[in-house]
Image (tube, rainbow, N blue to C red; front, side, top):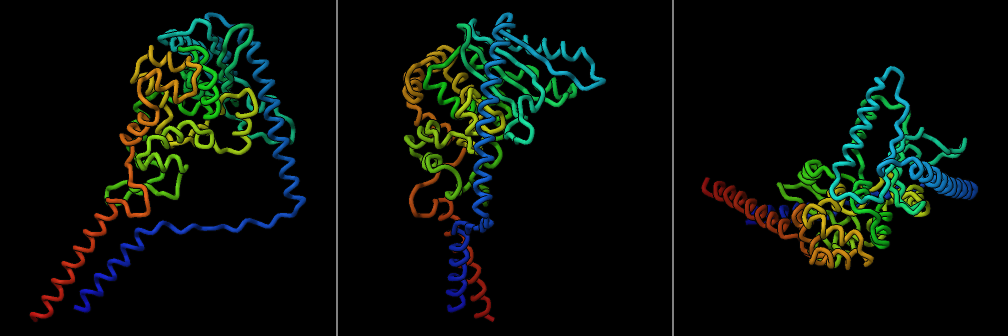
Length: 376
């Protein structure tokens, strides 16, 4: 009997240890001199201000060029290909871009789309590092009485494969080309998220991402257990089944803003609407990269047009256009792509169930062992 009790107690201890959250590893920060701290602060400010100035110069020069040269609402400025590349590939790229734009339905007749390849490092200052200098930048605005969406793609004399990889790749500009300029609240929301909810229209790619283990979960015994220590609190509350938290997770600037230091500051304080590559930080990992296109596919172009052009804040515009509260829709969407869990200090039901099953199995083993030994 003592051995049986000892075995059960040991099993309980093992289950308790397994259920504990992981220990936090604290790495001591290196000691820095006050002069080093001030130098870093000055360098960061110079990078930020130079980045904003560079973005303003880009937006001004590119918008003037695109609005002046546009024909049929499209301007294409290809790069200089690597030596030895087939020049005919430029014609292929241009034909693909035009065909992509012509195939859009609906299509806003006033919106001008520009796809402009620029040399990497264009406009940089010697000795001043600039984060995102080789990132694709999207500018959205209005000039000469017409709205525009411009993708500036830095390059280092790309190969043919590098050029054609971008063919037909309108990304966030696809929505602007179809529906025109959005309402002011929606435009602020898109800028804050760095167009993170319109990164891809490839639903097969999204399905593959969602079939893998969701971000912030631990795969154990075939069950996804959310790790409460990871992720934004609003996201965690949404995973706990709270619709109001789901709405907040999708709209609060603290939840959707990319946390990328100087680059996030650059998007917020310059004409840049998006710096590609930093939108994946918000707020449900990669699974929300095509969220706007999901809304368009589910509710249809007519309802999506009402949402896109609404002057109301995003939650009110969503409910008015789609007849469902934003938080409720997001909760159902999250539940379809991830596992929810019970909030509170108690163990999740799956953890409690596995714990009881483990204790029962250990009890059977210990009892059977004790019975054999007593009979012998």
